[in-house]
Each structure stands twice: as structure tokens, then as C-alpha cells.
Image 1 (cartoon, rainbow, N blue to C red):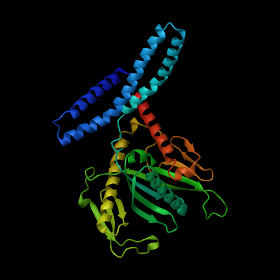
Image 2 (image 1 turned 180 degrees about the vertical axis):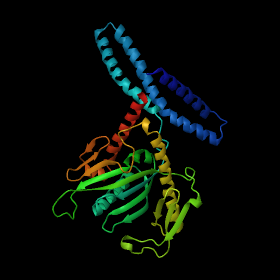
Image 3 (image 1 turned 45 degrees about the horizontal axis):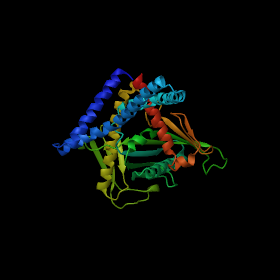
Image 4 (image 1 turned 180 degrees about the horizontal axis):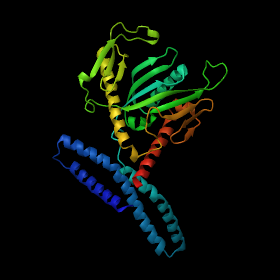
Amino acid sequence: MEAGLESRLQHLLRRHAELRDALSGSGLDGTEFVKLSKEYSELSPIVEEMDALGRARAELASLAEMARSAEDSELKALAEEELQSVRERLPDLESKVKLSLLPKDADDERNAILEVRAGTGGEEAALFAAELFRMYQRYAVLRGWRFEMLDLSETGLGGFKEASASISGRDVFARLKFESGVHRVQRVPETEAGGRIHTSAATVAVLPEAEEVDIKIDEKDLRIDVFRASGPGGQSVNTTDSAVRITHLPTGLVVIQQDEKSQHKNKARAMKVLRSRLYEMERQARDTARAAERKSQVGSGDRSERIRTYNFPQGRVTDHRINLTLYKIDKVMSGEALDEIIDAILADDRAQKLAAAEG
């Protein structure tokens, strides 16, 4: 391993020991204790990987000495066999240490706002958007996350023009952030008498949920309109002006919330979505500014980028960014097999970052 990297690792080991001693002592106030505890917990996984690497290196040296000095032929052969096994493990252990040192995405621990919209394909696209939305809802349940509907615009035929939800829990944004993009479906619609396969699409956006401290919104930059909520086909579902439309004048962003019967609750939800969209715009701007340093196969997460195809006649789901195909479309749509795709994408992302760091 490079000398500079070894030096940095030794520094982290010393810092971890300092934090352990400070936390086990007394005299820290609550704020300082929380701050040091967070730093200690962030360093602990790196130290664990370094310990595993250190043990493997010590074992390597011990076995090399045994293989060199053993007079018994059987013992010598056994030591050489074990030596080869440890040598084969070392590169993987070193990679894990290097991966643990890669900069973390500051937004990974955030909750997320999920937005799904029907794209090209008319009613078939709307039906697919509804299925995608329910796929993420089921996936959230399987992971023990909280899935809260924010807004829903239905077609009246079972499809969704657009739908949004707030998802909260452990590692929500970290696991869902690469779901942003165009999802394409290929299948024979129920209304298709000739049995021809149609292609349609839906767009998914996953936004890190922003807090008030993250994004400051000036009231004078907002235009807030209230109106009567309506259901599919314009049928009135509310007798008061409780629906809220917020327009952010500097950017032109518009957020509509009408699911709640309370105007106050709809405004709060709309502000929550608006903050997250503004935060995502800032995040995208930052990412674009440093895009040259990382051209990952997982793509930019741009909503115009086609990322995945769901082919129902063949029972397959293909993620185009990593050329992964699973022939278990039912389990993907039920949320059960979605982890297989997400884990593969995250592994590819880590590999790309590691290659960039080493290059």
C-alpha cells in the first residue's frame, strides 16, 4: 500500500484512540459528547477494516517464516498452502480499507422524496407509473421504512399521472438515489387486441429530503394560491379551498398539494417538497461542477436518462447502466428482488470511485 495512504491510516488510528479515551473520561458537555461520538462511530468501521488487514499481514509474515524454516515436509507444505490463501485475501482486504476512506455522500443518511410521473405512452404509461410507485412502496415496507403519500394525481382508469411520497428510515437516500431516471416498460396492453408489444415509460426522481436549515426560502419569492381540491374527472372531493399551489418565482418551480383536508397541512407538505427540489437543484449544480472527476457507469441520475427496462413478455428487468439482467420481473415489481439490482449498482459505484481514487 502507498506510503501516503499508510501515513493517513496511522493518523486515523491515533485519532480513533484519542476519541475513545476522551469519550471514556469525564468533563465533556452534551454537545461535545455528541460531536465526538459521531466522529468516533464514523472512524470505527475504518479501524475494523485496518485491524483485519493488520491481522492478515501478521499471519502472512508468520506463515512465510514457517514455510521457510520448517524441516517437516508436511508442515512446510501446509504452511505454503495457508500462505497462498492469505496472499489471495490481501488485495480484497486492502481494497476494503481504501473503500472505507472514500469520501461519503453527505446526503446518504437523509430521508427521501420519491416522485413518479407517467411519460410517453398514454394510459399504459400511467398504469406503469402506478405499478412503479407501488413497487417502491412495497420495497419500503420490506426494509422497515416509513412510506407517507404526499400527492397523487390519478387517471381514473387505475393509472397515475404523477405521485409523490416521503420515505424515511435508515439509508433511504443511499439506497434509492440511483433510481432516478427513465424507466421503460415493454408489454402487451390489455386493450391491445392484436397482441402487439407496446413500449412506454415513466420518470422517477428521488430527492434528498431537505430541512429548513438546509434551504432558506424567502417568503417574497413565493406565490401561494389556494383552490378547491378535485379528484379524477374534475369531481369535487372537497368543499373548501384547501388545496395549495406554491410557485417559487426565482426558479419557476411549482408544487401542488391537495391530499389533506387542511390548507395548513397541504402548505406544509408543499413547502417540504419545494425545499427538497431546490436542494436537489443545488446538489445537481455541485455534481455538474465536479463531473469531470467522476464519469461513473451508474450515470448522473438525470431524469432524462433511460436507466432500466421492464420486459414483461420475457419476464426480465435490465439495468442498462451496469448491463445487469434479472429474469424475475414479478419479484422485482413486488420489491423482493429490487435489492439485487440496487446492491449491484452500489457495488459498481464503489468500484468506479475506487478506480478513480487509485488512478
